[in-house]
Image (cartoon, rainbow, N blue to C red; front, side):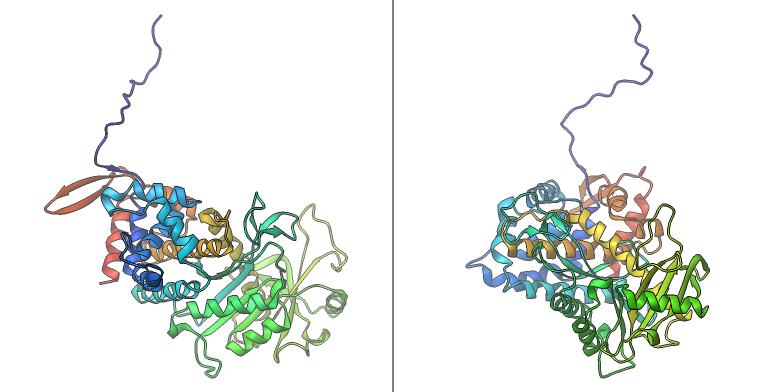
Length: 465
């Protein structure tokens, strides 16, 4: 019988040399060195060593962050990934050394130093070209998420309000709509039973987030002409203590507001007065089936900081959605409070509502962080998992800075999500050649984004010289 197979058979062997997979991870690893992150972390953790080290702690930390950005979800996978590239990017630490960094060296006493090192690296990255455009406002989005723990052996893991088991970290991201992932400013690891609207935790994360900004971009409560910063949160952040902390720090706020009987009555009064105006989309066009109105004078806000306003939004429910008892006139009612005065945001009330609605982008930031090591915390000790959280936030920043500086001219790469970015950039294959006392990474010329990757690598190096 004849073989009807049309393709030629391919011989497979395990004797290849000079080939590197995941070559694009090297651009993240180099970013960690160029921003000074590796050197800063080494300085912070130097006192945890009794003698000389084989691998500096900053190098191990940067290797971990780059591996997490590449998709590693535990220390063992991170060490294996780094070991597979050591013939090009230099020796890497073992799994035991990486574990020791998280479990012993980065304790609660050294975590503030790690956050300060990340802040100084951000300052260098922004000076090299990753700074936000000068549009007046910086927007910090704060939100919590649940990290599932499938065992009960991890310290401080507990039952969550969603009837799951694990941890309940609170995160702060700087909204960067020009890229997909934003920048991770701060994160507070909390037990699973931590409250959603704990004001003290929100105040702590806000303080860390502001400290993470370069000094020139931090707010000055005594300088009205200084940097303008808006803190956005859902209704979990709408507490009097957190609003007062924002006012004391010199930042504005925009918090989701719980719809109760008072607010529902205000919405019906606005309907009777025909006071609703059309909402708008991000492009400034009228949003069909959505309206906004101000209810500041209809609901008592005396307990909130001076100038607080309540803005309501009503919208036709989506097909199949059930109305709640707080809805009015057949429409879904939502609201938020803000201390932004009139005339400060283009579009009036509709512009204010659009600005608050864009807080929803934080869900995309958290989703991508969960795809980069946040889905599960690998350590048993709580402080070690807090250190792992800092690694995850660092990985997010390295990807963000690489996109902002290297791929600004390629929006298909700058705005793609992390899984796509890994496929197109980080997992690219290359051939390694040596000559003239140099090692050369030759990216496969047939790859669609090969030239964009090579150009971005050189652009990043030039930005820091």
